[in-house]
Length: 124
Image (cartoon, rainbow, N blue to C red):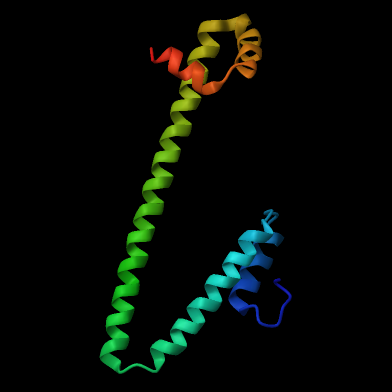
């Protein structure tokens, strides 16, 4: 998909840079990046045909949506980071409390449903 002549150059460069950095990229992600870039280009061409005031209004609305999306992504990343940190702390507590029994505990945990385990611990 990246080799297609219709692929926007910035997307092609972005994918190449990520691959050169050793990142594995899902082909569906590349497809989505290309699709979004094409839609953006199409929208920009349509906006260019509008009167200046409408162009400004459209840019402002687009920027507000982009800011809201960035805020959502940042909040999601903050939550995920807190979840990971809590998981690491809980694992360290288990490791300290169980000592030599940790491997047996992990083996049982692999056999159990993690949701059932969580519910049991929470008393549900």
